[in-house]
Length: 165
Image 1 (cartoon, rainbow, N blue to C red):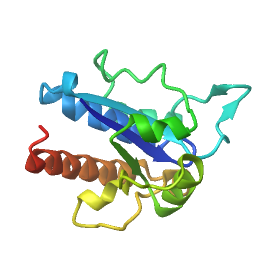
Image 2 (cartoon, helix red, strand yellow):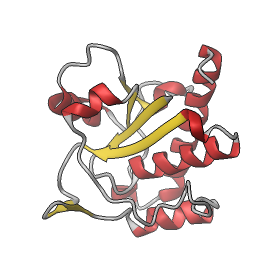
Image 3 (cartoon, one colour):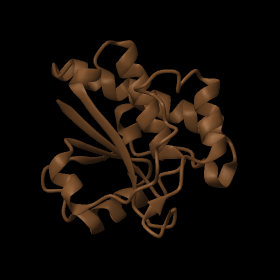
């Protein structure tokens, strides 16, 4: 099983969009049993009294606009923000971050990336080293969707080339 954790600052926009975009792609390829896909935050800003906020409504709207949420596997209604943990580093094969600040903050939580598991999602595209557009500041969820979609396609191509799928 390939275990992927997407990470952004608050776990209400970019990383949950990545989680459910990849779930949609995996489901359409008939590979759901081969993957464990989740998302988390580096901060606790979207977690109150132990309960995380749901996916930000405009991010939900963008996913729905793209036809994502229509199956049990892609239903994001129960998704709540959570913070990445030290244990996540051991559990997941890939910790894919939205930007370099997420990488730094993830390493602060998990400890050193001794196995090379922590990378930018866009490292799997023709734009390695680039950040996923942050819609929290731009309000442009379409650009974020395009970035994440390209990253997920590139990541799946990487796994296929590697012989993992």
